[in-house]
Image 1 (cartoon, protein in one colour):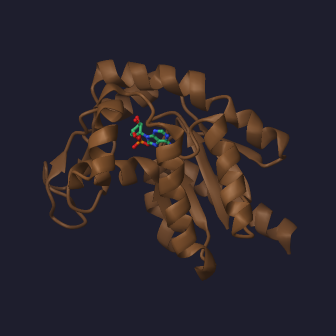
Image 2: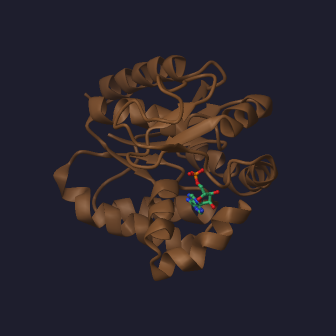
Length: 221
Ligand code: AMP
């Protein structure tokens, strides 16, 4: 199964993928995670793209698309499928993803558009905490860790992402509306768009996605 998760920053894409990747047995590919790993490792690419991420802008399409291409080339043959989280984020990336998959004789099953209100995503992003060691996601109010500042899964230290501050969040929302929203039509035109209301929280969206998966699987068989 190949699924694209679409939605504003804070819509819950990472939380949903975290909750379902093992159950579905798919590769979870988050370009945000790949980019942060490059920056943390201080690679040449990491140094080049840090300023985009810190200001809430998008990293250039060629850089992100190349990262995806390498991941897909390394895993396409295992047949596990993918859950793309935070990619594609521009129309050019959506077109490239179709081409990369097609070169590997694969195609997207559906894109899940997780619709969430602005107030809710801002509240989610400002309270979000991430494990430095394993990347698990928490929220100060909605999903607090058992021990403050410590990851429930691995005991790692929880931190607040540098771009989860109000000023950068506003910029990310503008970028989302201008560059990412148009790709909803890319999938609508392909008849692959599924919508879910993501205001209600992780469990509600997880159940909705499983229902959609059943329907898609039934159509396939
Ligand atoms: P995320 O973790 O998905 O919220 O992404 C964090 C930041 O990484 C974004 O604000 C962008 O600067 C960058 N980024 C992540 N995915 C992409 C992408 N597909 N295209 C361009 N930039 C991206």
